[in-house]
Amino acid sequence: MGCNSLKMSLSALLVCGATVVGTATSAFAVTSPDFPMAGFATQNGGTTGGKGYSEVTVDNVSDLKSYAKAGNKIIYVKPGTYMGPVEVGSNVTIYGYQGAIIAQPSSGSAMKLSGSKNVIIRNLKFKGAGAHDDDDEDCLQVNHESKNVWIDHVDVYDGHDGNLDITNASDYVTISWTKFSYTSASTGHQFSNLIGNSKTKTSDRGHLNVTIHHTWWADGVVERMPRVRFGKVHVANNLFDSKDASYCVRAAIEADIRIERNVFIGVQKALDLYTSDGAITAAQMIENYEENVKKTQAGTGTAFKPSYSMSLTDVSTQAKAYALRDSIKLYAGATLPDPGASGTVTPASSSSAKSSSSNVVSSSSSWSGAIGSSSSSVKSSSSVAKSSSSQGQVVSGTATLTKHGSGSTTQTVAAGESIAEFYFTVAGATGATVTGLPDGVTGTLKGSDFYISGTVSATAAAGAYKFTVTTTGATTNASKSGTITVTSANGEAPASSSSAMSSSSKVNEPVETSSSSQGTVVDESSSSVESPNSSDSSESSMVLSPANFGQRLQVSVEGRLVSVHGVAHTAYLLDAQGKIVAKAVANAETLTLSVPRAGTYLLRVGHETRCVIVR
Image (cartoon, rainbow, N blue to C red; front, side, top):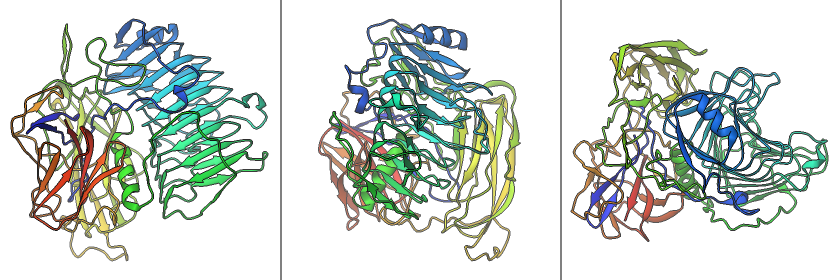
């Protein structure tokens, strides 16, 4: 499901994502605002990709490989899984529809840039072969003097050797709004990003100028976020919260790293200074936020000053840091809208693809994901690409769910501890849903695999949580059930084996408790959804899922004022990059927040996070 704007009085209000409340954890894709290019990719003449060349839409791996290697093209990739390696030439934009996945073979890379110039890669998932402690290639490679590369809104996981490495004098690269992670398919060497691959590669001096911003190193990543040799690297406004991390950023020989206004939560070390191979130029920590970081590191030296200007979000307080965290969790990865008619994507800077009118189907108690799905209908002058979401597409036949992974479907875990991850391979269906998981445990669809993982909330009630995974979109759907028994943090067994009570009867303020961008869906069943271009200013309102038991939030917009009714918690309005632009303390039945200008915002009340577009 993508964000869709709603008719509001004098404005358009969009609500598209939230965190979980109660025993059923839900998650779903949202459509990201289209942020412009920033960082080193704007330098050295800039990066325009395939702008000025013809466009082509591909739906098979043969065409994708052929057009990508030839270059001089804008390539739109339809939903589906494309087995690599895909070699990329120069002057290319590769932009994926929702559900487009480039897979890494057992040997080799998923996608490779080797000596490529002027390349843009956006809105794609890269599924690795699984990280193992043996020598192979990275899932996504930028190699051999590739220059002016923008990698934006991609999701890279389980890379065999690494997720995404930048090596061999490559230069002027920006990575933005990207998610890196590893799943149980990886058994070792979960080292995500290398910039500079050897201490002896002195030819890298003067190159490897890289910007990484608004990127999320999520669970499974152990090291290299990134590890840097020789390069000038700007690591800014990123999120590091992998529970598996040993260190995040590593500075090695002649590295010059500006580590600025990032959020580090629950990691062993934010920075590691590795001097064994030679002296470090600088690894400067600038105004970062660190919470529950076990080993602090002040940094060394004074880092370079960027040759470009870049607006960064302040993370000096917990509330501000959590605001950035929530924004990154909501938008990082392949969350851009599908491409529309010719010319609606601007490869040089950002996409302006618009979704057509559609009705949003929602649920407040289940996670749903669609395999290879398009998040919304996209109008074109010649055709309409219909949504293939799990609510609309039916696959003829009987679906199956096959369990994999080391974790059992029946396990016992203490509140505050992680479950042993497992997953189901979905076949003969468009997606899957899950109900009944304890707070903190989620279902995540990656390609055709539906993962159950997470850390049980420390406040989760003790008891037996019976969950059910069910396929969607098949003529005959399949279900699998299991039970996660939660014991109290002190190890006491539950008083009975009945279904556990909700752990969310108390919702803390944002500055007191961590939340996720995944959660219950908005109740939009009676709301009409219009194009963002709609000029209709008829009065309307939106009812949200409850932020607390016994309450229902109601949000309305008039002019530049956002009103939130029936609240018991402080309301925050954040811009799409996580900056707090307005705050209203819960001292009245109705809270009013003044919007400084038209744009995309996040509305946060307690554990609830919603995407808001105001015009």
